[in-house]
Amino acid sequence: MTLQSVNEAALRLPRQPLFGISWWYTGEAVEFAISHEDVARDTEWATSQLGATGLGYGDVLIPVAGPFEGGWIQPFSRAAGALRATVAHADRFAWDAGRVEMFTRRLPVRVLLGLPGEVASALVQRDLLANVAAVPVLLARPDAVSPLRAAGAACGVFALIGPAVALTTSTSPGAPLAYDTAEWRFEDDGAGELLVTTVGPRATRFERARTGVAGRAAGDGLVELHLPA
Figure 1 (cartoon, rainbow, N blue to C red):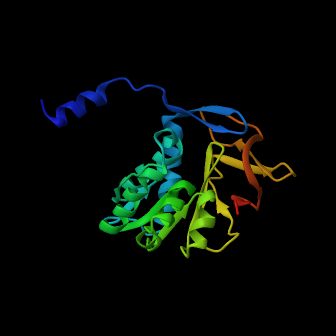
Figure 2 (figure 1 turned 30 degrees about the horizontal axis):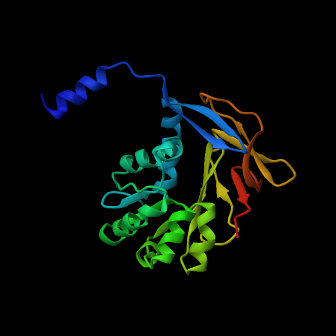
C-alpha cells in the first residue's frame, strides 16, 4: 500500500452530490447547499481574480478563514493550486494572529486574503503588523479595513456577501467590489441593504434574498459597501 494507491482507491469511491452546506446570518441563519459544480465554477472566477494579482509559481497565498467558510474560501485555495502557487492557511480568530505574521515573515507571500477584524486588531495590538502590511496584495474583510488603515496598512477588501464573494484589490477608500455576474446579481433594497439573486445553476437558488450586508449596487458586477468605522 502506498499513498498513490490509497489516492487512486479514494478516487474510485462514489462522490457525494454536495460539496457542503453553509450559512450566513441576517438575524437568523440562512442555510444553503453547495454542489461540486458550484465550487468548480467559483474556482474558475477565483482563478481569474488571483491571476490578475500576478500570483503564480513560487508565490504563497494565505487564506484566513474558519473551516465552515470553505464554500467561499476553497475556490481561492484551489485557484492558487491551478496557478501553481502554494497555500498556507490560517484561522480567522485572534489567537492565530501569530501564525499569519509568521507566514508573512518566512514565506514569499503575494496575496493575503480574508483577514478578519479580530485578527487585524490582534496584529496591531501585538505589534505584529509590519510584515503583514508589506504583503503586495492584502485583502481584508470589511471589519478589518478600518483598524488596518488606521495603523497605516494599505489594503483592498474581500467580503462574504450572503452566499457570494466580492472583492477589490484597490486600496482606495470607497472603491467598488467586483463579483461573478455569471453566478449572482446584487441589488439594494433602498434602505441600505444588499439583496442577492442567483443567476447561475446553483444547488440552492435565491431571489432578492437579504444578505445582512450594508451597501448598494454600483453598476454591472460591482457593489459598494458601507464599511464599519
